[in-house]
Image (tube, rainbow, N blue to C red):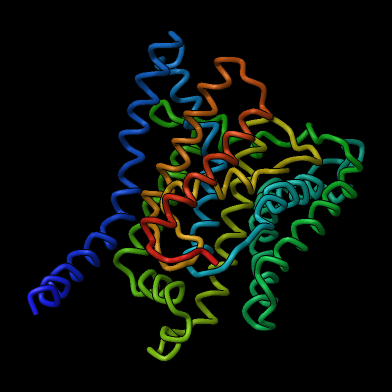
Length: 337
């Protein structure tokens, strides 16, 4: 009897600890970031300068927007691998409708605002099509978005013929070049997007519904939540965020090439997973995702200053994903199958 009572008392305590562990994992990135900043300052005099720190924020703004979109899809219990191709194809289509034919455009020479609007609409259209295939036709999200990634990448290379587009209006670079209070506009855009999304997830019924859908889709449907509509909307929002990320990247690089966004999805998943976004759906916060982005940005900056080749940085990202998955396995308390 004594043993049984002891086990009954210990069980709720164990459940409580498991509930708090994911939150602790998200907050655990803060001391890790602090340690990296201290180490960076000790090993390189340029690391803690204002220019370098602003450069880190500006360089990570595009990644932050794509990670935000992917995090929403993951919380809903789905995947979207095609976001990395949206980062490339959306700004290319917008630019080719604006620039003259002599500058590798379509020759339509639309006004610049129309070209910028097309970028967002292309992202929304890709997300809408993905949502239709996955939500309405109930196709596998991983396979659908993988196929879409390949299709869009082929279209991107075909449209540009492998060339790089340079002669775009200044508005295409404004998010990276214009500053406010010393920070690029892209940083303010990413910060606003995270703040709004974090508020919606925490306090709005759609945010709570999204967690419920990711946690148990059928239970959410039985509770009266419009599962299909919200799941579809998430793919559209993710597509729009990826297209904006592509526009930010275009401004940061100063051009668009046929490889824009290529391989980016691995970094996106690394940032989301180490930030506490669950691959099983239903768990994770925007604060955690943002700290994941900042951690990877600081690591990349440190390695770049140390002149470490880029392929070693990619290898490090893969290792980070594996470690984060193992941590998620033990904090989540259930197999990831």
